[in-house]
Length: 98
Image (cartoon, rainbow, N blue to C red; front, side, top):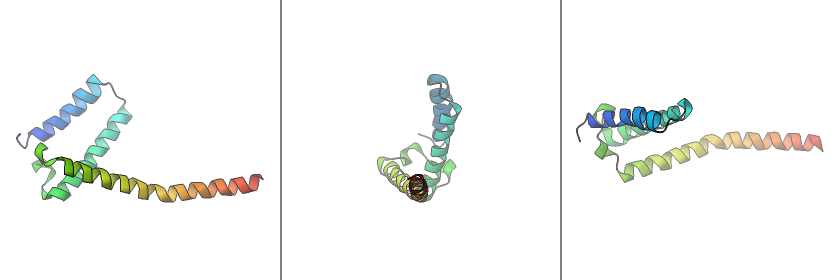
């Protein structure tokens, strides 16, 4: 597949698959868009090529799996302080309600 193939595939995925065929909400499409941005940034850094030079062949199982692992770790780390804060609020309100 040519270098121009990846941008075309991504555009078709958003316009034809998500919007036309599945009729997804703008919020869902925005979520896909944001994830694709993160994936492209990760691939660019991992492979060492500009986004415009990436090919569909670059997105093999190992790259996607590494991206998934890092995304999960990132979300887990980002949520920890929020979870601790939420537990603290529940404890404070729970102890004041008794």
